Image (cartoon, rainbow, N blue to C red; front, top):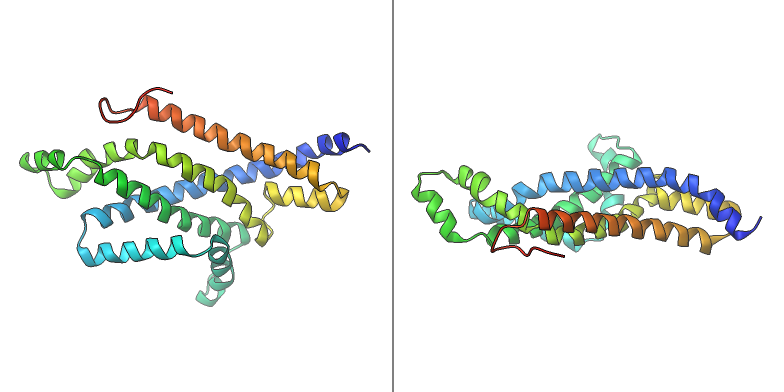
Length: 223
């Protein structure tokens, strides 16, 4: 068979891997988002020793290779009496990594909210939690959208790392096809195109959200 025929016939298998890749990306970013909000809020608003602990967590996670985290969770879980399969181990490691980077994004956007707004909310008798959830976070989330593009792009690429645990996502599918056909270049180039499409589509959507949710006079509007 020709290279073009092999590549074309391989697309259905690659698309099966693409489905799992997208699942990994969305679960990881969602879990990282949920974890990052309290981490960032604690760093900015909480009791100093607790804030320091969150800073240490962030620095450690950002300072170690993602592959190390994946192996640590997968091989370390049994020592804690936990049996985590390859998919859960990979997603958990990527989620923890994402939480550290997203917390950095949110910390910056939280700190960008004017202190005068916080002072005004306090003068109206709002408590700290209400100020965080009703004044600070609604603005911080919108200001964080541009930085999310980088996190999206990074997570699209990092999702392929779970192949080391045997998770059959898009890169693993491609490797299996290459092992069977011996045609590495066309297969991996095809997969690269899919990764580029995912990255560009996500960044385009985030840009749309940035424009749609722009704060007049604060965030930039327009493409």
